[in-house]
Length: 169
Image 1: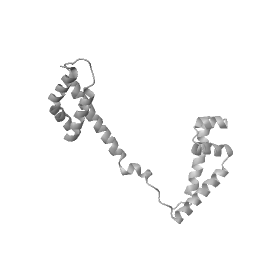
Image 2: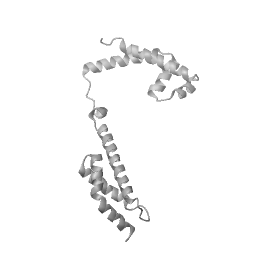
Image 3: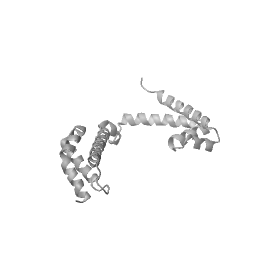
Image 4: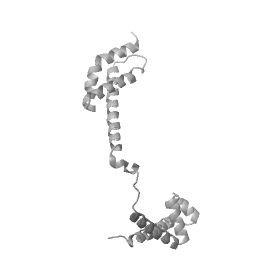
């Protein structure tokens, strides 16, 4: 008897028990049957000689596939949650009032940026708009990284204050 035939016989002998083993892990008999079939496809090509632990190995494959399916299912359900993908939904057009408020806020931010010292303004622009790291900005401005951090923090505080000035309370 060929080794593949022995594996097939082992699989067919234990198939029902394997499905019964996987069903409580997965919670669905139909999915458990799919897992057992996948386990057989992984079990068949391996090894050269039959081993005493062939059945144990088959159970291990079924268990691992069942756990993988549970993990994949949990991950997919987290990603399919409507709250997690709200950023994918198209944004409605702003009303004229909202456009006016946004334009006013943008104007205030531009005025604050123009009033900042040149190095501070450049640090904020490089960090927030250019995506540069603090170390890159420090090298460009020839100051320490701590100084760049302090300059950016101070500028952001001024920008936030400008937005808070005329905000409704």
